[in-house]
Image 1 (cartoon, rainbow, N blue to C red):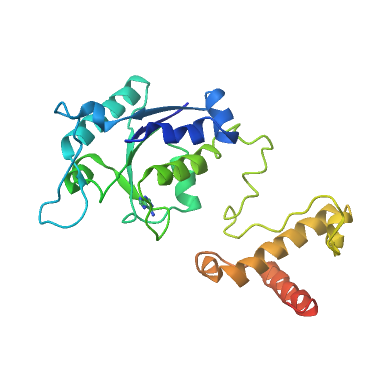
Image 2: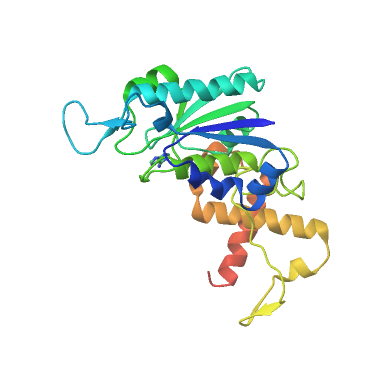
Length: 254
Ligand code: ADE
C-alpha cells in the first residue's frame, strides 16, 4: 500500500481527494494510506507560531525551519514504521521542474511519499536543503499555497496505482501515455445540434476505429502541442495519418 503523508496547515483540504470519486474509493479500498501532519502541532511556543518575518525585509512571512523539520521527521518515522524503506520527501513549489506524465509514473512506483505544502511567501530555504529530496511544480503560475498542488500530484499518482481504475485500459489510453494528446470522445445521441458522431465510430470496425483515434491524437497534438513531438519519434505510418488528418481537416474547412 502506498503511504502518503502531507505536512500542511490545512489538513481538511485533503478531504477533497480522500473522500471523493476515484481517489476516495481507492482510499476506502486501502490502495494508499493518507495522513496529514500540521506543523502547528510541532511549534515551540504557546502561540503555536510557525511563521516569521523574512530576513532582509520584504512582504509576507516565511515558514520557520523547526516546526517543518519536526513534522517532516515525524511523517518519515511513521512511514518507516509502516515498512517504507526510503520515504521520498517532495516540496511543491513553482521553483521545481514541471510535473510530467513520466514523473507521475515514477512516483507511482515509490513505497512512500511525504509532501510539504508551503504557505505565505514559502519555507525557509534550509528546510529544502536539509529535508527535501525533490521539488515539483504543477505549472508556471502561483497558487496561494501548496495544498492544491499536492492534491494534483496525489490524484495523478493514485490513478496509476494497480486496481484503481475500473477499466484496466483507461489509464493506458489517457493523454500523454504515448506522448500524444487524447482523441475526441462521443456518446448518445447520434446527432446533437445538427452535429453527427463521426461515421467510423458507428462502423463497428475495430481496426478502423483504432486508426481514426490515433490519427485524431496525432492531428490534435500537432495543432495544439507541437512541442510534444520534440521528445517523440514520428513513425512512417504516423506521418501518413497526419497527412490524412490535414486533408480531412481541409475538407471540413478547419
Ligand atoms: N505552490 C504555489 N504555486 C505552485 C505551483 N505552481 N506548483 C507547485 N506548488 C505551488
